[in-house]
Image (cartoon, rainbow, N blue to C red; front, side, top):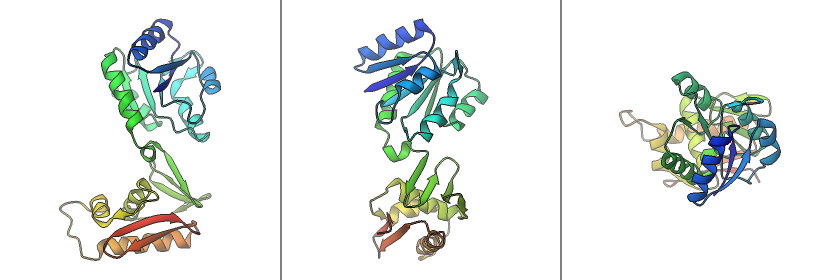
Amino acid sequence: MRVLLVEDEPEMASALRDALAGSGMVLDHATSLADAELITAPGLHDVLILDRQLSDGEGLSLIPKLRAQGNLVPVLVLTARGELTDRVEGLEQGADDYLTKPFAFEELVARLRALKRRPATMQRDIVTIGRLSYDHFNHEARVGDNAIELTRRELLVLEALLRRLGRMVPRSSLMEAVFAIDDEVQPNALDTQVSRLRRKLADADSGVIVNGVRGVGYLLREEP
């Protein structure tokens, strides 16, 4: 596993280098946001460890820059700022995990390995197919600058299809994603939601279609 550490405290960086090397990881080190932007590139690192209080600014500001470049590397924020508001802010700004100092190196290593195991589609903030883009964090579907108005259940259907992009999603999986255990669900409820979603995607000229196999499931794919 190749890790990028963005940390300007020499003693902390040295300790992390030794600990991660002992766990079989390769560590690249940047001491500032500017250096991190020069070092990182899409697909180069498996995980990024990011401090918040850096010499040239707030560490969280790096995350949207990476995403804008198409860099989907999972980000673990490692910082002394551990108040609830700090943790919430970090996660809302796009961090995949948040760990406060002081910490146990064993826990850090376990979290890094968990982030690397996470499926690529779960790491993405925004997924694009055809002319459709979907922001998982804000739960918003767009075609260009235009938002597609979807109901809560239509969004849940779309999210479930996007998480298994390119694969048939069984009806049972879609039912679990869209309806709660206590919901009173009519036999054709799922088909109704899919039909409405399919129509809205077509009306928006999204460039994607929802194919179905009766009694089996549905597949989201780009129009030929």
